[in-house]
Length: 141
Ligand code: ADP
Ligand code: MG
Image (cartoon, rainbow, N blue to C red; front, side, top):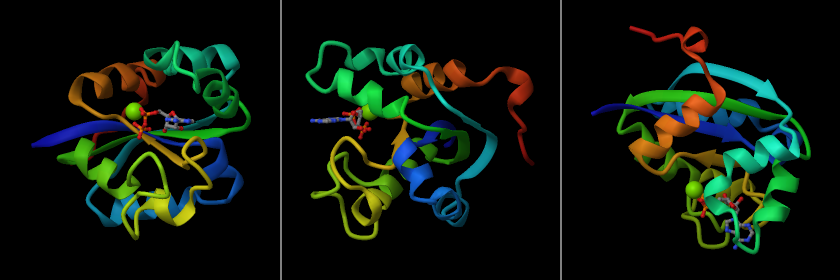
């Protein structure tokens, strides 16, 4: 089924000059960017995005990290886009992520792991709405 998912190249991915590399993986694997922007989140905006993790021990550090530099936010569209993106990303912890995945190849640790991807249709919807309005989405035939 054709789906949309939210992808973020996190501050470490931008700092490591991996924007092109990450987007190329998506485009080569049937995930088409239909909306995209670069922005630098405030701490409060990062907390809002990761509200689901509020109360976890890593929440404060994670939101500091996510507001530490510019990020690239995208909507990816394609067949099974949510799971496909998660496959390309690899597991949260790069040490256990599968060979060849973005996180295995580029991430330094479980927090600074280069990319974010929505984990289910409902979260994809909420996360897309957090960053994009209808005018910013460019569906492609
Ligand atoms: P994922 O991004 O793979 O969906 P989670 O939703 O569980 O992973 O966590 C969100 C983000 O929080 C992770 O991508 C990572 O940046 C950070 N994170 C998760 N678990 C930890 C942890 N144990 N220690 C530090 N940071 C973590
Ligand atoms: Mg998650």
